[in-house]
Image 1 (cartoon, rainbow, N blue to C red):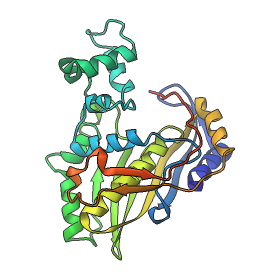
Image 2: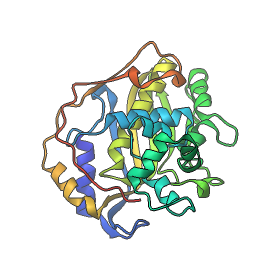
Image 3: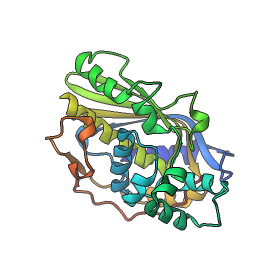
Image 4: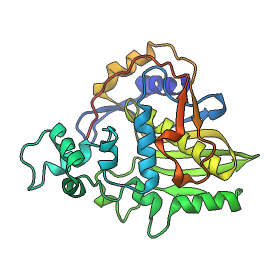
Length: 288
């Protein structure tokens, strides 16, 4: 994952200090692109251990069209907990519960989860119902029937619904490209949290590329990651510097159950990560 470390160095060397919505502060550059050839291995960071279970469950959650964190909480995936919690704290039902107590209620109380666990019309809703269009279903059909199309697109950015989302889509727009029996995917990400978010995003969209390739009879080739405001939060500088001091290791392999023929039939058990030997995990606080 030299590409990732090159991006980190570029931001540290050429970025500008910038205020942000969370009041944490960042070092930021605008407009960056990295390319990951999946024929060389699965692009999961080796300079720190990445939570692959969370990546898989979140992606399956998107594909289902789900927007409530209960599925994630039930599978011990915590990556979305802070956003509904911040909304809950402003509600009349809030009685000083900690984040941990809030998550416990989501897990144990279905009525509470239904009321306070939903994020609004975020990614999954847009992927499966953008103004009445199931974009995933349409994408799969278009790749199969018109692979040379330049309209193989899924958008999560819906201006009419952005204000109702707990967090407007950061990874907002993707385009697929078919050539010589191989499938590539380019993602445009408007806002890229380089320490916490970007490693997830690279692996998630690379895995989505592999899944779409399998169900359309193609070979996964290249994930192209284009980012807008590409930033390191000021409270993540030590973590980034630590990663830059570590040697990269050989990329792992991701194996997918070849029996799955529909994008909607994948389960967590259908994925097996092999030969992953990363450096130890590095903790960092999410900016909400």
